Length: 585
Image (cartoon, rainbow, N blue to C red):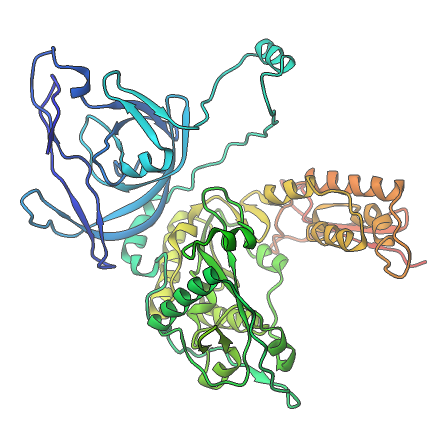
């Protein structure tokens, strides 16, 4: 144990080992192995604690930089986002274990000495008064940090520092070419997605329903399971295998072994065989999807991969039940008057549903060594969205007054926090009873505004999601009919927000006629720009309140007619919805 001395106090930090009780996996957490003892003021600087003033959220905190800590630690309650909750045990210095207690894995952005460290992950653990956080080995590894222990200077390799520059200095530097690139940013204030204190007891009680990974077991056989029926004239087809590289073979073998261990797949003798191939998942560090060619050239079989099975032929030969999916507008309209929202994201949604034994042969896929078939519902089969939606409606039908479900997204909505706690508890009880699991890191609790199905919904009404308006703003002018249809599809999704959508988009629709030659002239460009501007400046609409009468206002604009609705109320003058159409010639 290292000995470091400070003239103010004497503190002994024991080496601590955390044992996750729930998962039976041990994670070494070694906050510090040091001893501070009283001494004179003539001790050299390198013997003292290396502590830095920092900011987390709007709070000033102190960070202890410790090369001996194998995990980043933080005082409970400081971080804004909880990622997981679990019971843990700590091993004392003498080797004995403490009783189990609940702690959280949390995430937040840290500002230290002009440097920003985004999405830092910590384990909550009680800290002494000398510091609030510990930067341990994960921080040193990620940022390749170097410390001069004589001067206690910290150098972070290739890390950008923030510098405040006044207007005249900025203009001078820009003219002299001091900046390689310049960006204009739009800054908005976003509330941190903290978990309200009122909901913490509920999450602690139902923490077994919030897992990052599904348990290694089969899901329950419920009243609704996935079943696939083939057409009477269906013709068997065994697709020729794709040729895959060595790195893909190694990664696929890991995928197969993992799913056999879980019981999710089994060996198959089916004559219906489809091919499988891999696509790299999003890189959490860059937020981008690596190209498949880059992955294959890397030779790294441990990169996270999304496996895709080519079920196109099976889908063409199957009978798909026409189970309706609820309209997005209808789901959002049910949120009127609600002030608190919780979003739950079911982990690996379809894999939480059983495939009936009679349908499993149709899910078969081949590797270079063997054939396998799914025991849990896979991605890629055309009947899956409808079957999953029916299961969700069956399970949450009794809670439909305060629950909205769209595929694997569950939204809980309430008028008061008191009701919201009860509503969240009721949903968690359904999850536990039917062994459904939500991914805590992708859930949001007790928010006053949520992003739901491409819209921002709050007590004030509904507006277009800022991410969607950004993608619309950067959309390049179409060069072919296919790209134009893609833009009109994106814009048409938000037509309820634009008063004269039909008239504005008329020149663009005229250019979608594939029987005529592609034409993109001045009229089309003006309509394209006007539609982009209208979508970026779209208003916030009120949600319809069916306890009040409605006013319908009509107008004819050029070759189109327009309707928009409004509630009869002394305070609500904002439109509810715009409806438009083209007049027949």
